[in-house]
Image (cartoon, rainbow, N blue to C red):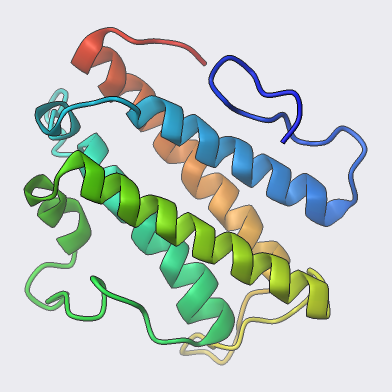
Length: 179
């Protein structure tokens, strides 16, 4: 990537096609999240603020799950990989958020990074084969399924929302601020 800012983020292209623009913004949001969670200890990744139980570690594991869920299960109708496949979702609907407290920072980063890499490769392959209008293979109960365009846009929203949470938590943890 060219023209990285001081936090390792590449600006989305100013004159890219629709796919390059959408994935550029998604990668920018992913890089912002990586910046907000970089270099923290396990204790810092478990920190909460106010009455919220949300943690940066839980957020990292949640975003790894969301990457695998949307680009794997929804887009491809593929089985979800571990650790999601063996999680007891019936016992804890927020398993990824809660179980992250038992994971090391290194394991959380590896899980999230691998999920992003899988999602990016899946998205690139799907776009090259069928474009942004590709309809996801997994249908919702009503028979509808989102397009690749919708999934990427949804993921931009998902990261943007959680990056706002990450800003607040990171500032409370160690005073780091910015964007």
